[in-house]
Length: 143
Image (cartoon, rainbow, N blue to C red):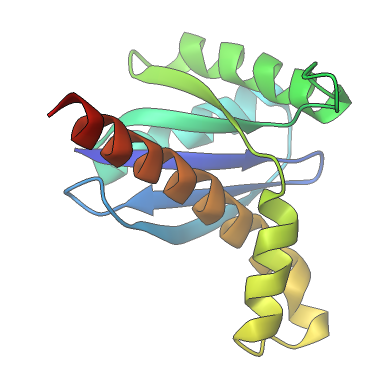
């Protein structure tokens, strides 16, 4: 089953998709923010188009484990997604995903001017890959 990963931002939404086996995350696209409802409809349409069975939305937390302002926005976006699709929507801790994406883009040689848009997709990919890896570890622990 494919899984869609979301890095929700104020200006852009990074989107990643897993392979058919739900093992490897790949960048898919960046959606420019219009409104929560329109953005959720676009993500729901992408999920249907890609054959995703689950949508993972990254959520950030502060040092005490409480959702940050961005994390609360991501949670509201997840609620808007629930109205647009019958798919399972899960919030996933996105701690350090943007920093990991920035480091990865530097490592692969993406020029500084092009890193912003790429970071959204890469951050979504990092969020999705951490989710997929955690699911794989759960499967191994339960075997």
